[in-house]
Length: 238
Image (cartoon, rainbow, N blue to C red; front, side, top):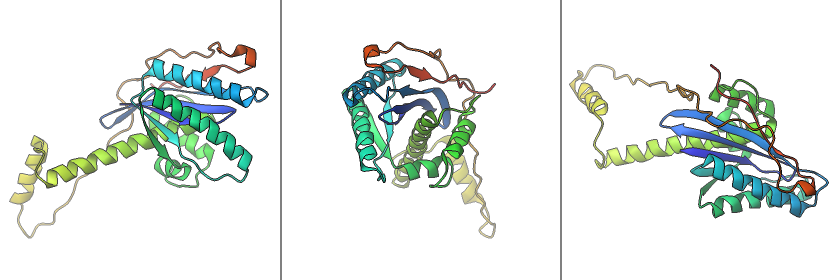
């Protein structure tokens, strides 16, 4: 399952795509959409829409994860953020993709372990979790963190659903699970039962960066002064 994470902004919008394969999480691409701050708001929003549509067509995500609304001290800045966020939601809806929303504190808690983590800590952790060669830009790192948060949430939800089905006897246990159950039933009643947890790595066994990086893409709104989409060269470390 490919997940498109979006960190919306009226001047810089971060995007990232990761791929969840069972318990392995792989890096596909991340980058930023840099928009001309002097261009009209309508022009910038149109550029965000065109670039996100292009990203969705090229990278083919299955779902979209986006930062949820949060209160800002500056109402004008909050309004502009809401406009960019609305465009991103419209792009996902037009592509028929499910959208999941996560508050910033939830994203930081899921990636760093603290809801008040700094942006530098988020950058460090997404690099470590995905095994990247370099540090992504702040907005791209935020988009990666949002995508990773959804990946973790999806894994947790799938585990809960499987446990519920097992509890109701609706899913046959795997041979390993059946063996574990028989072994537990054969233990003496006086023995102390211990649970063994299996550590799972979030890094894939092979590199998942399957698309060439394009450092510059011509903007369809060049006359409006919009900058190009910048894709990070951050493939997995060897």
